[in-house]
Image 1 (cartoon, rainbow, N blue to C red):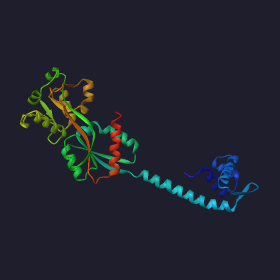
Image 2: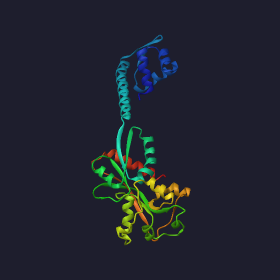
Image 3: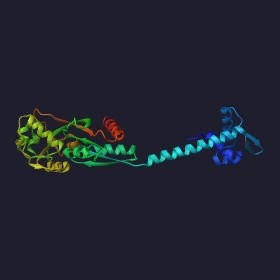
Image 4: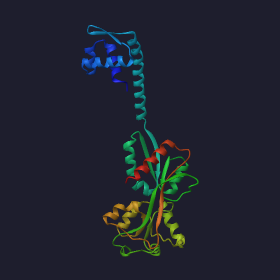
Length: 297
């Protein structure tokens, strides 16, 4: 932090010898002389008196030595304090619903940690109902949820739009259709998440909007794990309605296929949700980072 020419002067004032000062600072003797001349010209005073190979300080030189030593000490204290601050590990609890926690956040958190090395993120993945409960109990600092929630009760900001799509094994009869009817989905081997999950709630709400009763939603299997649901679908033991984010790889690999639902589009939002009492500096920084990162990939 301290200017190299002032450092040369302080070293010379201590050793009182040009040659030894140069050796200590890995400078040539002319370079040491240039540093001193620069300071004398800038301050418009004479700082040293030469006595053969040795030097002594003028009165002005003594004044600069006094202030220079203080500046050097302040500089060291500053660097030490900043260094210690950077070493302090701050821990924050981030909650996420299943799709976000399994398929979006791992990449985001990896990028975040590569920049903010002094921040530890503890990730808590659960369904929407439980994540919001933990947020209200202050067990987590911020949440990313994919399901509906009371926007009047929580502070929130949208991350992105998501789409729920029908997927099946390429061996399933419905995979051969150009479009699949909602009624066909409801009366067959439908595999869904448990009640309380955002995906389940969005799907049931869409079915009711289309005139179906909640009792018409016949769930062949109810599974709390997205990975397990995908394995069952790939094994042709049923089909599901799931986030496109969760099946990108399977669709690319061909182990699953998607068929449009006739006259139906199911979209939802991924939202940041947080409380007014949270750490606003971390929350604001984390949201800004995620939004910028999402716009790039």
